[in-house]
Amino acid sequence: MASDAAVVTVRLVRSFEHRNFRPVVFHGVSVEQTVQEFIQLVRHDIATRPGLPPPFKKYAYDTMKIIHQAHGAKTNELVMSLEDDEKLILQEGLTLRAAGIANETEVAFFRKEDYGLYKANPHTAW
Image (cartoon, rainbow, N blue to C red; front, side, top):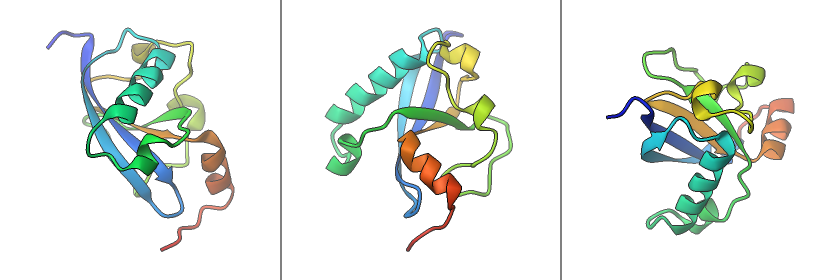
């Protein structure tokens, strides 16, 4: 595998409260592309991916945050950590490499408004 190609798992977060998410694996992701280009690639892929339920395909995802990197510690949160937003939320002007994405990185893809509401009142519903 080339040094600029990575396997990235994208966790589509539909609901923080209900812990409703689906992981989708992307192979051969160029870490030299911008965060915005990757977001567009993921949006296009999930809209046409077979086997993914319609609520996940049509959701208004707009933000990505690093959840876990290979050989690193994992959070105890089931959906994603609520800490370190400044360094873990991907900034659109950066390349994936500059944003901290490497091979076997897992990122969450979610709606920023939902995340803000959940972070202000982090409770779960069953």
